[in-house]
Image (cartoon, rainbow, N blue to C red; front, side, top):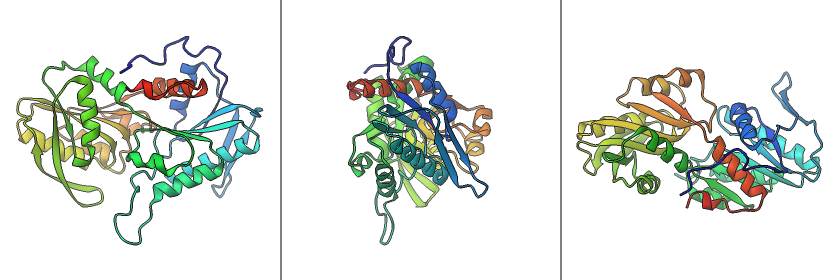
Length: 325
């Protein structure tokens, strides 16, 4: 697995346009800096009634354009902004429009959990496609099958290389154990554990209602181990905190967590701060709030070099998957 990417000089002569939405400007600016490509001048503002207005202020005719926008909170506003940006670029005759969505909102609604319920992840895919996107690039989709909801090329990047590099910088690997906080995340946990040559354990979880969970038991011997919980999304933080408690009760010495998308809604930051977790590491796929920045046991690592490398490879028609295998 390649761990070195986004190095200076790798992107000389790149002929692309980068367009920034308002959801995560700091990440877009960092990607722009890594690629050494200035952001395309654009206006994206609201009318008095919060209607979105977009104007691309540079010529993009025949250009390879990348629109970077996470559909995080406020999800509906940011999604609509993405769609209007794509439409504006399409009508400006851009040659190819790639929607770079570090956090794909509505991804947790990827199937029908009961009768008369929507598959909103598919609806969002339809909207992006009909708006005029030619390609989609996203990061750690909640469910891999969402790629199949699109009829256009879709690259699902993985934060694992960034996490592995951070783990190797901060931990001795001999006594580590990777833990999935639920059965559904076993594949993700196993993939990361393989990269650092560590055993895995699983927390058997029962969810009574959305946003609430109860860990029933731990599958695997975690006694005397330093455990790293791995997942794609942390929202309320309840699952992580319950899993950390269960691991410590089963003999783990310390519990850490690596999560790709820090949604952290409601009182999640306070819950994490007061939990048994030694630290929670999240990526900047979602713009960190001031509360996240102030939390002593939450740390943010950047996925800008990874996304920049993927954008460059896409532009040059090179392999993206070789970044991860």
